[in-house]
Image (tube, rainbow, N blue to C red; front, side, top):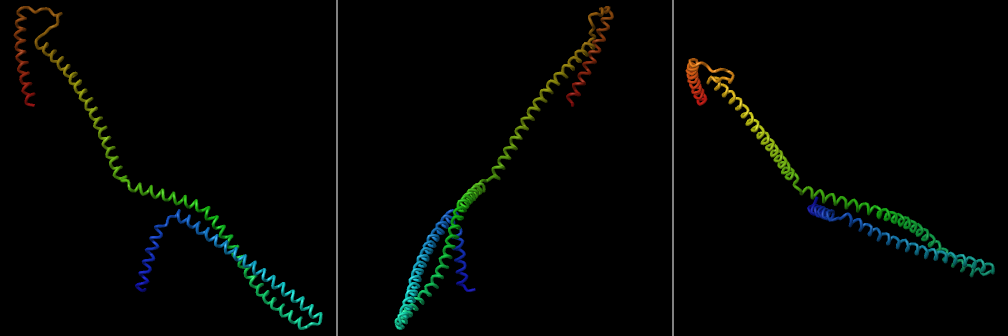
Length: 261
């Protein structure tokens, strides 16, 4: 393959690519209908010219055939009158018109076939144009829909949906986290209240028990019991003081253990 052939092929390929990209389906469809309409006009003109030429040929044929017939009759008349020379001359004229009529008849037959072919082509072209007009509107609608879809897809592709969705998901997680923290705070607040009330309740029991123990150790008695005799009262007082000292000692040991722990 020669260098010029390769260059020519590359140039033609690039030109075809440029033309293909520049083609607008809607405009091309409209232009195609216009071109077909122009072809239809030219074909109609060609049919009209062919018919006119056929008519002229037919007229010439009829005239020559009529002249040939007329000179035939004259030749017969001259021969019937005994004038052979005149009859021969008439036959010569008849032959000339007859030969011309034969040529015109052949030409007329050819023209008749051409006219019939042109008429069929004209009918076919008119049918194709009518069909093309019907399809044109449908194809233009499809082309417009395809362009709209292409523009929509192009717009959608330019939107960073992945980044938007990621931000949306982060905010969703943040909302869930805030709800969890709120719930945890509520539960902790409730637990703190429960612990405070439990401490109050337990403290009350301890205070009651402590008061009871103090009353028992101090030898407290109920109002129904009678007073002790003097000697017994002194003895009981001494015992109470001894027991009180023991209690103080135990309390001191308990404080030390609590401090050590």
